[in-house]
Image 1 (cartoon, rainbow, N blue to C red):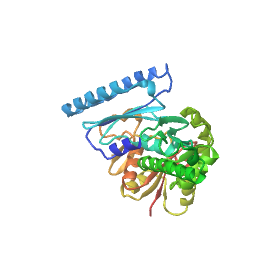
Image 2: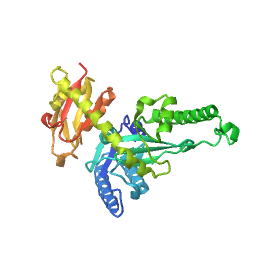
Image 3: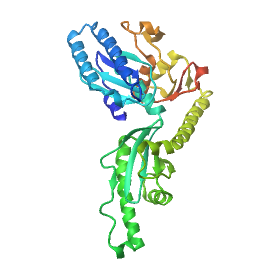
Length: 355
């Protein structure tokens, strides 16, 4: 998910099509997903057919059709996002609920990707045995994937079968240290590409030994003792409380930043003030209520909200909040998505400015 965000966030074009829809985990409910996607695909095609550049529109329509054919709905999670323009056709699954919609703009609608990265309880579980290691990526209590290459890592060479050598505690300790060091380096190589919190699933002895040799203990948020050979989902079910507690504390910390900014003069709640500040690169942290979307027209630099029924009209931005998220990110700002009515008194939107 992080990789596709990096790939598309800076792409621009006259017709960047984003199709976003909720999906289902299980059969036969997942059969409904194909029908919904077909309906949204038709909406996108109808809108593209009205574009003046017929050649470019046809190319995008053809790429969209091919992409839709590739999708196996048996593997769906909470939602699905498709991105298509003249140069790219990609899709990804998200572990969050979304609003079903089609967006055609000069850039892709990355807001749900960013929201997913910020709001999902995503993490790695490193499952350790004395001579084996697995790595599982999970989000919102469900397995995203069990990573391969170089995982699973199995120690075929570092432990001796010689009885005399095996009885030497120092030598065995050195073998263990070398093996766990290899695991740590493999974990770090993956973490650099997609940094997420880490949970260790191992007995107390292996957990302590790994922490002792690891160079990256600051990213370990908790430990849990479970059997190495249990299924990936069983392990995630057993340790997800660790991540829920970590996420709750992290969200409380971010909300405290908002409260502290109230009386500093670096706090904005009016949508036009926020838009102006973000365009000038003044945005530090944008707070958005989950589920807040707003179609709008920009007239003389001012935001004029429009009904969702008019979102497909010429000159209308499908979601001005998505534009804010993207522009703020371009200037190095971040976005925090808040659930459970945490931003109600601010009408769903607030900004902490840099100055």
